[in-house]
Image (cartoon, rainbow, N blue to C red; front, side):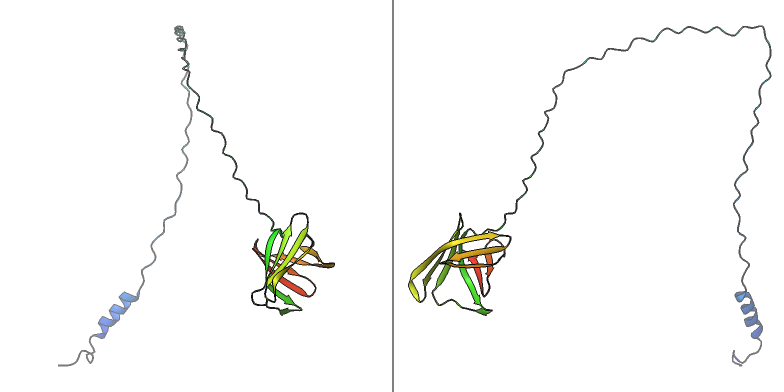
Amino acid sequence: MRSLWRRTDWWPLVLCWALIGCTRSSPPEILVYHPPAKRVVKETTAPQTVSDVPPPAAVEQPPPPPPLEKKVVATQAAPVAEPLPEPKKEVRKEPTLLGSWRISEMAQKGQVMPMPEGMQMTLTFAEGGTVSMSMSGGPTPEGHVRQGTFSYADGQVTISLDRETKTGKCTFEGSDRVTLEFDEVRMVLTRV
């Protein structure tokens, strides 16, 4: 028996299959839309005839009845609600120096100066521009108080203690922390 591939009588089938399978049919005919033509209607009038018959007389209609009276019923008006008050705008208070402050950090010429063990320094700013500085504990256990004046405006503070006056920059960090920077001294104060 001969193999299928060796046979030579199958080639017409392959050729026929190739011709039929590879040919494309022509594209379908695409119809083009044409709107319908407008209908023309001719108006015709009926011929008028002259007749001796008079037109029918108009029949009088009775007048329409008067409108019904509307009864007005007194109703209680709904209470007018008062407008709600505007929520109060929270006015942000500017931080103030008034009150007592503890010196928590101190530096001189850029070098941090730690407080002696047990020593506390407090600045108290009062109404009227007076300031008092108290030191207690550490090397002076009996304590020491110095009195003076101060003024504050536009981020600048001026403090006068014992005939010595210093003016510097005052920077608030919230309402409980402030930094005072003078020529050579920098102090960080926390509210007591």
